[in-house]
Length: 56
Image (spheres, helix red, strand yellow):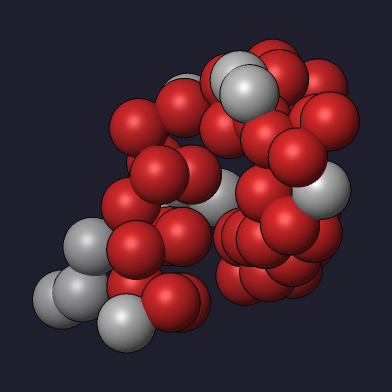
């Protein structure tokens, strides 16, 4: 039996998209992962991992 995911796919996609967009803007790039993770109720390391996977 597969492990159940803690976060829904929609949340993962939204958080990743927001992080990519924030990192493009130099004014908001600093601390973007932590800030977005806190806003969405996601652990920052989870978002960091999703971002690595998305950016390849």
